[in-house]
Length: 213
Image 1 (cartoon, rainbow, N blue to C red):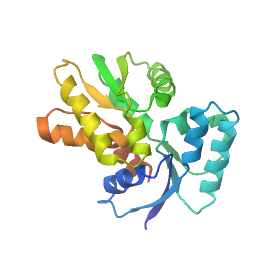
Image 2 (cartoon, helix red, strand yellow):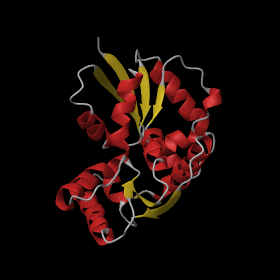
Image 3 (cartoon, rainbow, N blue to C red):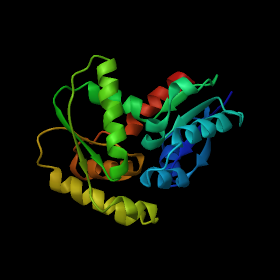
């Protein structure tokens, strides 16, 4: 029997990445919910956003889904678990990714394109590592003047900018990963071109979702 997974996105471009990732697994049916407005509120420093995320999750939970996947790290950072009392699992896209990062104590670089996601993601990573008693050595870098391209629907230009940055960074002698779902396609293309492994959130997410279901 198929299980319905409700996916909450900050931008419609994330739908394709999740659809492609789970296309081989017939037991999972994806139902997508998109709210780009919340991201705008985050960037403007609006208040009361944790309550808005809580209301969104409760509404999605009432849409006959068996679990919820949150693909936006800003949404995750705004969540207050103690305010939620849902009977279905909530999967945060960054936690399986964090597990992968915590497996390596050597220096690592995490790339972002959206500056607004860096602080919340890195804070959650440090909390996750501390909670699981892991020592990490991680540096965050932002690929400047890039995120607005994907927000404008200029996906090819966005991927090209990420690829160029990765090629310029290929000489670094420590692991590199990309933190945002929108960066996965460029990371996968770079791996094909160079045979250099770039970690990303989708790799561990699939295992986690299938385990939950």
